[in-house]
Length: 224
Ligand code: DX5
Ligand code: ZN
Image 1: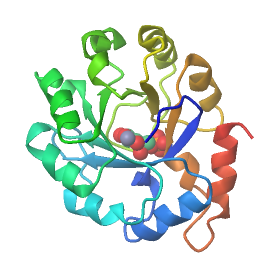
Image 2: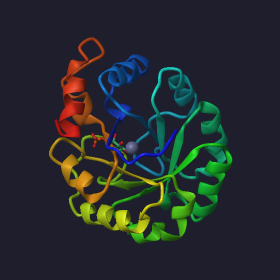
Image 3: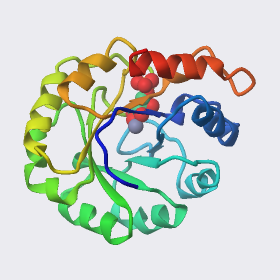
Image 4: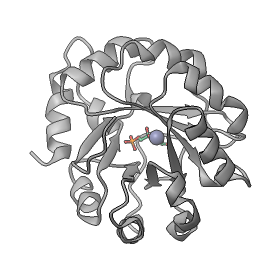
């Protein structure tokens, strides 16, 4: 995985057909997805539950682009090796998931993955300053994590711009997750984000049997 700051669209399979993830991944990649975003929720750190390492491992052979795994779980550290074994390219943990984020980011890199740090809307991006040199990606949440289809929190745009200043020319992606659609994407891209996660705005209107709306939606989010 080489680093570049071009705009990337990362469909979240949270909005895909849970009984058909393999075909959904292949369909959305064929329609132009740059990365595949996989939301892991534990019913504890967030009030929703999805799946764990066996599902992520099963998805690995369907993902040809980048497997971007967003952990909304606490604790994180006991599961890092399982996600490395599952084949995650990027493993993102929340700042709010525990007291030892610095150690967690080190452990993710130590297990051979790229390390991501996610920040809830209630967390100032300033907390990332001492952690940036351990990060390959910072994910700014533009909804409170746990569910797809929520409304974009506009006050996060200035936090993205501040993070962009803090990062400077370091090779660190800025990812934005939650409520991203064709209307909000230009705002976050202008503020400095390069990875746009989108669930409902990508999968709406299409299906594995009729995937062309996925492509139309991705192009609309990318800006035509
Ligand atoms: C929210 C997840 C997101 C979610 C985004 O907790 O982390 O990745 O799937 O969904 P939309 O794009 O529908 O807001
Ligand atoms: Zn996510």
